Image (tube, rainbow, N blue to C red):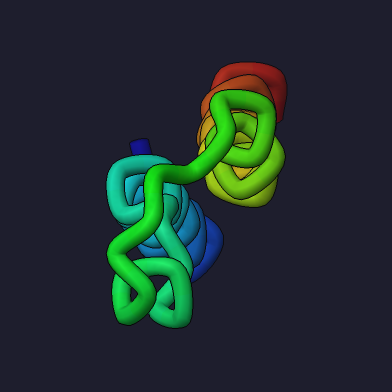
Length: 69
């Protein structure tokens, strides 16, 4: 597989998405020390999941492009 900047961007997206997925509690909630409702936990994880899927899509398109052309 050839080296391109799309792969670097995809890896950054995947790492950022994983961090957003793992560290889902907002700062103001941590300062109040209250328990977050369960549905809010998943609302805050959605951008991380989308970023991971975006990075995986870029890697998949890069692999398909490498084999096709």
